[in-house]
Length: 68
Image 1 (spheres, rainbow, N blue to C red):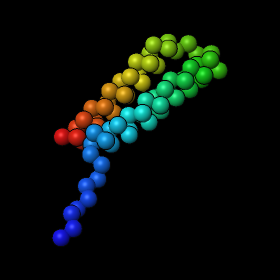
Image 2 (cartoon, rainbow, N blue to C red):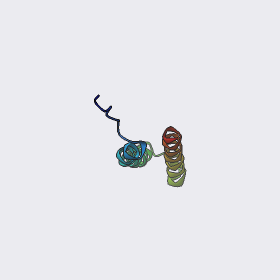
Image 3 (cartoon, one colour):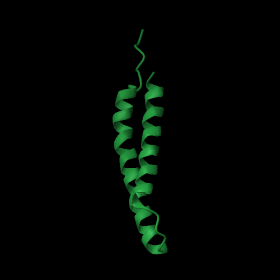
């Protein structure tokens, strides 16, 4: 009887996803900076970074829950 092949483990999947998420969130910060300059709206950069970091934490928690 042939062995079933397992899919990638959650930690391997997390290792693949984390760089993509980090790069995407960095792009969000960069785009927010550009839009802030273009529209001359003074949204504090720290507020944008805080929102992005909160999104990062939500993604990490979701991945951790999937691992369980």
